[in-house]
Amino acid sequence: MCGIVGYIGESQAAPILLDGLSKLEYRGYDSAGIAVFDGGQINMSKAKGRLKVLSELTHDGATLPGTLGIGHTRWATHGAPSDINSHPHFNESKSIAVVHNGIIENYIKIKKMLEAKGYKFVSDTDTEVVVHLLDYYYKGNALEAITKVMHRVEGSYALGILFAEEPDKLYAVRKDSPLIVGKSENGNVIASDVPAVLKYTRDVYFIDNEEIAIISKEDLKFYNVYEEEIQKESVKIEWDVEAAEKGGYEHFMLKEMHEQPKAVADTLNPRLKDGKIVIDELNMTEEEINAVKKIMIVACGSAYHTGVTAKYVLEGLARIPVEVDVASEFRYRNPILEEGTLVIIISQSGETADSLAALRMAKEMGSKVLAIVNVVGSSIAREADSVLYTWAGPEIAVATTKAYSAQLIAHYLLALKFAEVRGTVSEDELKDYIEDLKRIPEQIELLLGNREKIQKFANRYVAAKDVFFIGRGIDYAISLEGSLKLKEISYIHSEAYAAGELKHGTISLIEDGTLVVALVTQEELYKKTISNIVEVKTRGAFVLAVTNAGNTEIEKASDYSIYIPKTNKYFTNSLAVIPLQLFSYYISIGRGCDVDKPRNLAKSVTVE
Ligand code: G6P
View 1 (cartoon, protein in one colour):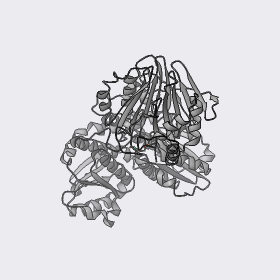
View 2: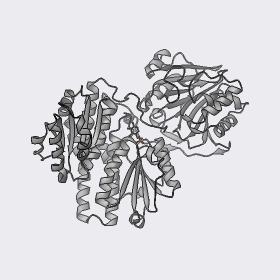
View 3: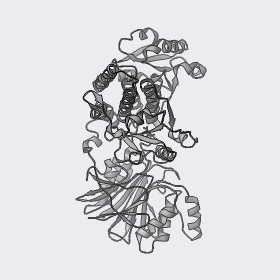
View 4: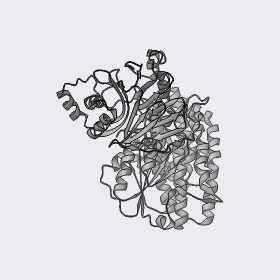
């Protein structure tokens, strides 16, 4: 989704803006632009395509002098990717420039109103109404104009604004789209996300909904929509700069896959104390845990897939009924949330528009909401009743790996805590589960060490047209993630199917040589899945099986097998997902795809 940056200080703004935008590339974009005030007027450069096109156009920013500016990477929603639709957008006299992330839902109505008053629009974007509306309301007081616009527009927005008549101020506004302000000795910055400011500062202010920041070289002031000044506390960001850089790896995805043992250990260790699971952040008494009648898990994308795994784990260990839904469905299906329902929202970014809307709806309906989130201080983290953070650190590659793995751990911890309190596992069983948990980081390490074998296999399937992932129970949940990873970054059509359901449709697609990846980690289901493997092999499929160490029986039924180290049946996803991630990664490389920034996708989906 769109990325915003802004700078005001003593240094030349343009190179800082370009650098900040490069840190937001992971969000997904199709064009970029910057606007800088040069002391007399606002100058702008924007271009369709990758950031390097803009860098070349501006000679790495050299052609745009000035120490105050805003920048933007655009992920097109209204209006095709083009130079003209790129941000920033100007008013007619070029005295106001705006960058926007979000969607102005009532832009057609406002556009008609403004056109009737003689305003001329040059782009197809919803954003352009904001700049003309600012022009319409601006009578020498920028704050007043901004609040008037906020009262008028509907939808979501994070805005960075320059007024040529107020050359020592940068304005930032937010409603339902992320925006932060960073304060540093060498000037102040705004950005959509933390990686863009880390180089300059760790002291960050999270702008809340319907708040405005007025930023000068030395000073920050915050206001609400009634123009009243408000006080805000800064948050110290603990991530180190290197965590947001590639650090010698060819791609962020490869680096982040290798960071999984650490992400898992960091999420796990603080919650293990004296052989017990302690989750203080849960904010739930034993009575409250015992009173949970149902869990409703809501999320999008890979986070939804960890939710599907969590259903099996929570139901199996804690014996609580669990329902899982994708946020975009949940929020519009008039769901039933009876008393005693705990709602869990899972999100890496903490900013996914549908997940945030689902959270708000669940709260309005009276449910307690627990968020499992990676980005500290994000909207979902701040609005939930309690937050269980995954400590995966910044994740840059669009396709999630380490945040996914950390989310699984958060669910295991939750399930075991609930199981302990509700007495559905014995003390000895709990001890064994905790020992298994502690082994996961080194087991992941072991699997990552085996990457060459997977790379060789992947090289054979670089030209595949269709790939099918099958499994039963938790293996089905792993299949969903394996299939998504592959299609996200390699653009190969792939589907995940519950193995038992195969014969009700998908099996008609199996032909000679079709690759079927069979997940076979659930011991009590081995035989059932092996029957399904035989069914596809009979129709010509080539079967890659991912199974537990020791299950050598599989070699008779499949064509190629990958073994994962031994763990209990609930935690196999944490291990089986590793070869699937590596498989997708190497296929993507083999096909020459942009692994970290796959076409059309965005890391943080802040529009619905
Ligand atoms: C996008 C990303 C996925 C991610 C999903 C949910 O589609 O490309 O990798 O799983 O959003 O994002 P969240 O930040 O809520 O986990």
